[in-house]
Length: 73
Image (cartoon, rainbow, N blue to C red):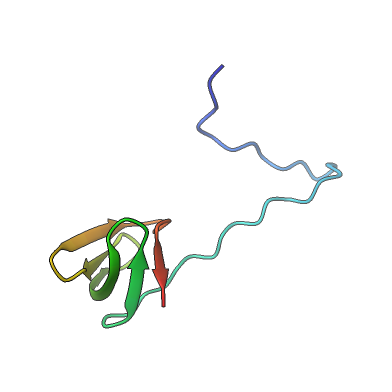
């Protein structure tokens, strides 16, 4: 059995609450962040709505949206 790539739409007559969309994360140049794989870093550049450039010390990475593993500190 495979899972559909499209989420199911919420029916107005459903007794269940509609799923809440996660709020988009906003980053600023120079802000400190943490990544689940790379660790602590500092934002060095922003591609608005597309990606964030982060300097992790020994590595510079381009993290693409939706930034699931990236968190502001």
